[in-house]
Length: 462
Image 1 (tube, helix red, strand yellow):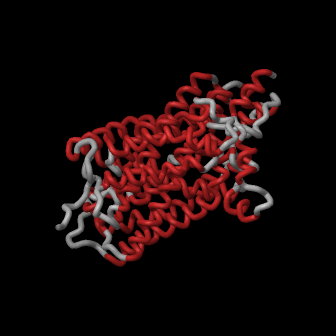
Image 2: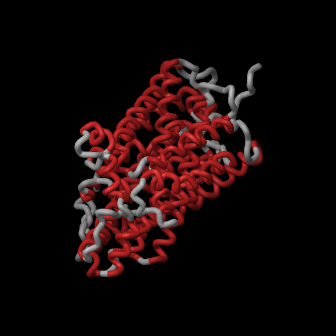
Image 3: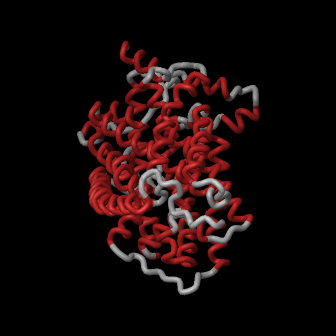
């Protein structure tokens, strides 16, 4: 009983805090601020999945070629949905076991490393904590770099480094958003923003037509090929916050197919936009990681840039919120009821993100590097391995809360699926993808240098 009390105390009083923020008496506050339905979870997953990667997928197509680009999107989209499903199963299993032990989660924000700890022990917890936090850290860095890269296409009076400083300060305001319950309106608006941008890219590219003497030479070499493939691996690896999104739901057991449905919607955005931009501009994309940079400046393009800037602020919050929770628990501020005190305590998390965005402003190449070295383990290999180990014994599989889905059949077939995911991602994603991405990243450093003021900026006209 003592351990149960300790666990509850460390967890924090987020339910009470959210009730204060979303007073049931205030209908507007409840409508826009306090979400936990299946629809909220779907909006969160769909909105968080693409973000700025939408703008770099044409760049990946130029590295992969049209056919491979489409195949990898479909393949990694399904694989990502499968491992998100595994994470949801492990979350439900962990929560059910703990509730049988009378552990009270009403004041507890469950996180992925706690699921691993509860099911598999401290070594799994430590590995999961390292990969998850490192991925979310660099995921936040990428959002910050993207903000500076995008705003430059509207206002080039300041260099991208200066814009990074400015948007770092803006994104720091996410410390005031308590938890994933409070992203209801932001997730909804975020999906509208990515939908507009995707269809703008598609329609604008088709209207623009192919540039003179357009070339579609991808894949030109193995380095570019696997770099592009790992950027797509990164694209559909946005489920590092699955546990936190599930915990924000009123009925987490309904999450099972949400990520798959979100992925199917996302594919209706990513496939047409990436294909159309690559068709129009071809190999020019190899030196233009952001698709917007090749389209002529119009009111529609400026609208897309502004909407993506707002969306990147939202996605920054999505990536950072789990880091805020971990940091609060580490410094024992997680149970503080004052939102202002917690916000102040969270600020140190933003500082290294700000610094890394200034050091490595290589938007595009950094996505592939993070995808191969971090996403491959965080949301593909570790969940698949953890699921197999958790249900390895006969008693564990017999008493599992969630049985293998009907389209899989038996536990043996489920294990075959998981082993296939681990082997593929380990060899293709981490192995070849890591080799190619690191080589490409080093080339960017050699060409532009660290702390470069304006990565891939055209010569400034007097």
